Image (cartoon, rainbow, N blue to C red; front, side, top):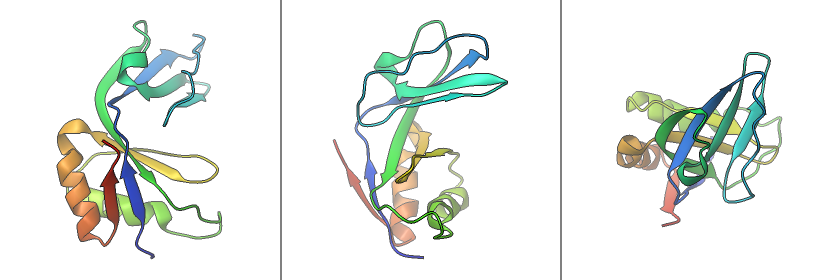
Length: 128
């Protein structure tokens, strides 16, 4: 697996949940946000200061972005990030876009996560 370049985005994020029948609006474009509507619920990931007050909010997440883009046929890209985090005991919330992957960790685990990723041969830079 190739060494990856990851960026630690500067914002603190919230993972928000709404009942499936509740309309949710995506926040304004920025470094990262996610809106997933499924049968059982709607999930919004957004900067903490954009979290809707009427949602169930799990606050205090930091977001790592994989800088490279890979063809869908390349196996193990996300696993090369998740395995070191699991080995370090870091819980995650992972998601993907068409071009890359994002991995969120609780803010208190940020340093431990960055150290585990570096120990696995990845480069981590902070956008702060």
